[in-house]
Length: 255
Length: 316
Image (cartoon, rainbow over all chains, first blue to last red; front, side, top):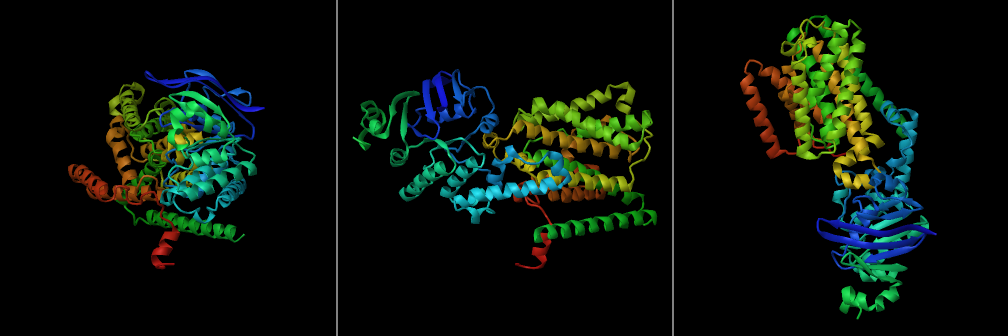
């Protein structure tokens, strides 16, 4: 069954058409990549799915429910989490607090309980902390948990973004250029990590990436966007030999 | 288990310090050591702490620049006086009424204005404060611009002390909970916060309403200490005074707000005979702080027993 199905999605900014008649499906457990040259509309797709933008037309069905018009926090609660192309951590907070915030939507105690410091509050806080640390351990970030997010190196900030997204307990994880700015070895590690979390958390993953080795290595199916339109769809091998894609994007890289 | 035990030791020692402080001041008042002048300043300190800590929740922790705090104080002051003075009900009901009405005002103002960001929110809240003042000036029931006189002096030291501690406790407990983290995440990055499942509008309004409630409490205490309230008392300059305390103390630091509230009140008292110089000095201090320590006295750090321990114990 398809976890998400997008139909005829249109979005324009002023006179510029950012996305035109975008159609897309992703099945449960799949790992799909969205590629395309800069400015092709990839991040726009993510912003439309997560409710940051509202589409002009079309529908985003997620587990049989249309997400169009819902607020981003509601969409997150339905099981979609994302990372950002330009890292958006809560910079002045600790790594641990960054992850804890992502668990807030399931906060196990009430506001009054927090103010009165009832036993439910202490139990709940302990639970939240345990859970956050569990996620940080998977990513080998536990020893960094008391550091401020802004003081960590770039690669670790990228990983914390993934941890934070995972802590919202998503069904669908959307990664916006997770390997941006990473060296080949870090990219390789990231690839393994993506495979691992997918298996461990039964995730469906959609990712945007410029790094071809990552996309071709890890994705099962690819969509290629150019000027706001899907120009090709298929397995990495099919995409590699697709003439339109080579023309539009891959060019000399693969040719 | 050790952690829990340490917690109780900490809570116990803090309660002890507070109790000693309370009894000491109460003793000094009854013994006549603290004269009228000191008592007035002491109550100003308490009221200003309540105002600064509650505004710091909105401006410092939620990151929403509000310039209308005196407006909520006015709502609380007038409602409390109407309840105690005109309806002849108990002070407790006056205080509760002040909190609830100011909180309600915060909700009514917050819902439409908290969609605005930065400068626009500042302008909208500034306008709200002025609207309250002008409306009060035109209501005959509360004597318009002349204000209400002869308010019974019901704000005593136990009330001041109790409500100040309560304010700090509620706000600190809120900040140090999952709800507080949600509030702070709005300040850090509203978009990211929203996408991590946090209803940012709800938490902005929550912080705004709680901040307004305590401003209303401060208004009620003020009215029942200083005998007279006039709409003019709650003008823009009053909001500005409170903002100075929050900025001086450091946006996002409760202890910073408390220290700054004490400092600004003391400064005001010291310069009582030179009101003109006071405003110049305020501005100068603000300029100097903005140049040399733009994050304020405490930044977003908190002062605690542990900090003192570190300072006295050297590098531990």
